[in-house]
Amino acid sequence: MTANFEQTLNIISLDGAAATGKSSTAHAVAEALNYLHVDTGSHYRIICYHLNEKSIHPIESPELLAALNGFKVDTILKKNSVLFEIDQREVESDDLRSYTVNTQVSQFASLKPVRDFLLRYQRSLVNFARRNHFKGMIVEGRDIGSVVFPDATLKIFLEADESTRIARREKEGHTDVINERDTIDATRKLSPLTCPKDALSINTSRLSLDEVVSIILKELSQKDESK
Ligand code: DC
Image 1 (tube, rainbow, N blue to C red):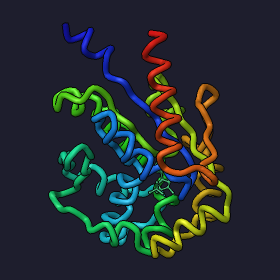
Image 2: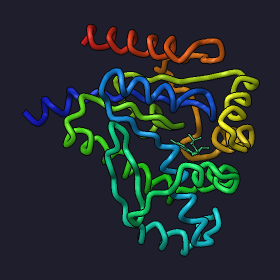
Image 3: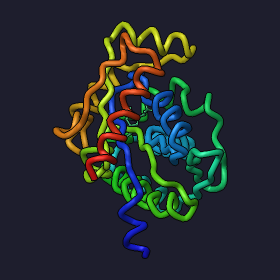
Image 4: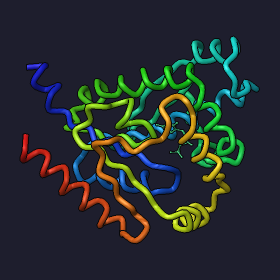
């Protein structure tokens, strides 16, 4: 019975560079399917925020390991999204998108101890989804289809032209350094941003959110039919 239930949890991986439309797409797909929505970028941002608060630099050091080992992690369900909390503190969204976090997050995300810590946590969310009776989860990030869930039911990779991506961030009113982050994210040694071989790549530049969501839902139903 348990084994059967385990097999029926669908996972959609949604990878892509900064500002390609991952969050709004993941959110809309999760709503349409009543799936659990996991934003792994927010996990890296939260870690970055807490380490920065402790004045820990983005290099491998005994201080970094001690801080990671000392973090008390909680998972809170907010509607159908996962809220990752450290030391029982909810960090404001503006603080997670501050200039400091935007400029440091990719450096922390390149470090093995940080990635190992979050890989364990992110995989544990499968059990969290089951416990909370979700039929599936949509997980957005950079290495979801390649490393975190290589057996995902459906793998999507989002792309968008540079001008579209810059315009999106400006509209959100955040000062981001998307080119710098993308370069670090795509060239780092560990789990770089990459389009998995078996992923469907969608360029969102000239598509509406509804159109992107429809493509994903159609693709998923075709996978379900061929099971
Ligand atoms: O999705 P985002 O822009 O909020 O992600 C912030 C940073 O976190 C991104 O620049 C790289 C890192 N990240 C990662 O390395 N792996 C993931 N799966 C998700 C994000």
